[in-house]
Image 1: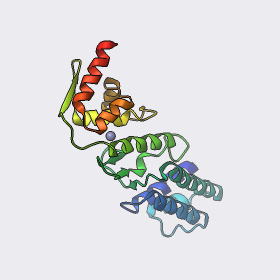
Image 2: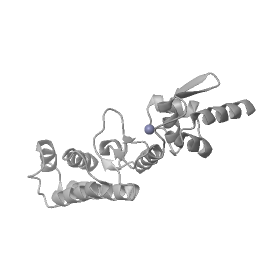
Image 3: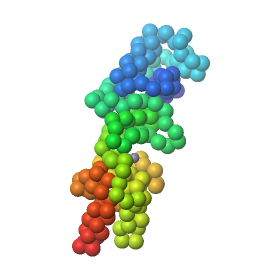
Length: 213
Ligand SMILES: [Zn+2]
């Protein structure tokens, strides 16, 4: 087993040991686990992880410890000042936010990298920016939806289009979200209207832009 797999198993074990924590807490727990791995104190870890580490060479252990520390550092870097809560979220949801609030929740199992790194910083940053946009959005609006050309969008789709439009990348999004992003693009002025719940003005603006193009 490669050290990245050891590190991932240890990361998952840390993440699953608590229902909710801050970025600081999560980073601290990952660093503590790295120290345990170095100190070969694996008694406290659950069956599967203890088994994995039991068969790992000292070099693999050191490597896994280093990767846990890298994950802690990346989480600190990406989320500092934003204070999201880290917790498991249902289904494919990587992040969620309450409109008109400062509440942001991030699922720590859904910001892991597909390659040899632990944390996908690019993805984590985009998820955070997306959720931050939602916190600025009004929960009330002057219409239940908009029609642009022949396409209709409901309130949820409008707010998602605005939040997706602040992301640098959309490759990791669901088909539904990518489709929304393609059909309903937004600039800063559009986002401002969404924030204020001015869907009627947004509809007029988008249709005008569509006609003028
Ligand atoms: Zn969203």
